[in-house]
Amino acid sequence: MRYISTRGGVTPVSFEEALLEGQAEDGGLFLPESYPNIGNRWNELKALSFPDLTFEVISPYAPDVEQATLRNLVRDAFATFDDAAVVPLVQIEDLHVLELFHGPTLAFKDVALQVLGRLFEHVLKHHGRVMNILGATSGDTGSAAIAGVQGRDGISIFIMYPDGRTSRLQELQMTTAVGKNVHCLAIDGSFDDCQRILKTIFSDVEFKRNAHLGAVNSINWARIMVQIAYYVYAALQYNEPVTFSVPTGNFGNILSAILAMRMGAPIRALILGTNENDILARFFASGEYQRGSVQHTLSPSMDIQVASNLERFIYLYLDGDTDRLSEFMHSFTDTGHAHLPCGGQVDSTIVAHRIGTDETVATIRHTWGRYGYLLDPHTAVGVAASAQTQAEGPVINLATAHPAKFPDAVDQATGLSLARHPRLAALDENAARKVKLPSDPHRVREHINARLLR
Ligand SMILES: *Cc1c(COP(=O)(O)O)cnc(C)c1O
Image (cartoon, rainbow, N blue to C red; front, side, top):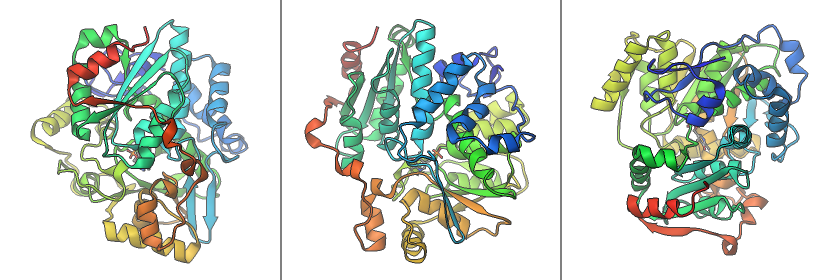
């Protein structure tokens, strides 16, 4: 199995290369050359635990990783989850929820990042290499990335975040990580400043090479690959094809569902929920991809106006026509607008809804009142989107965060103080480690340079 770039400008690479490089050198994203069909293996796969099913789903995509090692690494990754099923499927009357928040930071990103950190460690060791991960976060991605690599050999991680602009819980989840290889950089500026610093440092090609810099953002193929497993796992628990409802920001999670369908999983359709940052809802209704300005909502991990993983969908939609894909992406980068000729709805299996703040709050309140089940605001966007959709067969809502990660919004919606989790309550201010730095790429680079793993 080799990996091509969506822009068609690089010679196909191996899985390990795609893993370590993250983004292709021509600016495109990596995709596998083919998608193995597992549609004739349902009975065998149905009987497996989630970790072993994950191994079966990802193993053809990672043939260059020793297979027994891969299996153990996946089992080890999911042993950090606090539910025996790893990703339990909860059914209360007609409400079906796939809980993806039982990992160390209580959000769905743990599913992929716990595997990714272990994959990095293994592959780096195999090649006698080290990696210094540099990232910027507005809150949630940073803690899941840190939890994935903390204490791992051959990896250091430097995460920048805007000082004083993340929630207290989000900051503590990052700064109380115990690994010596974790560096939290509280930048005196906004999230945009952090991203600007990141870009500046990465654009120095020589420094990037000498410092063995790497990234763990949502465009890494390995994250998409691991997420395919929970769609297969949940779909196999029903006797008829299912529909998934997915709260979406960067289009990473739902892309994995599309690939699960490609691999033959019994999935009828997908429901895509966005908050007020509705670029994807507009795109799927019309083919018009038009950038707006970012609005701050109750579901901050979906406050995004550029969905980086959409590039992979467009590539597949255009049947791998890299010229047309490049044209689309360049048009969007240059003008903030691009158009996919489709005459209305882009894909008959994907229906998208924009869910406003009032509706999100009402959905949390209603779901608590009717089912006694507490939703976080991201999950509520997906549940509200499925309520607006006439679907045939069961609809499975993806729960992407534990409600206790967003206690203000959830408590406000229910009027009660229910959104709590012992692990979050135990986060200790006194154990926090962070370094405050000015919003200056040179100063940040100096700081990192003195602490690099070599
Ligand atoms: C990241 C995140 C999302 C959005 O996932 P995408 O892959 O970017 O679509 C949704 N909910 C939560 C809680 C998240 O952390």
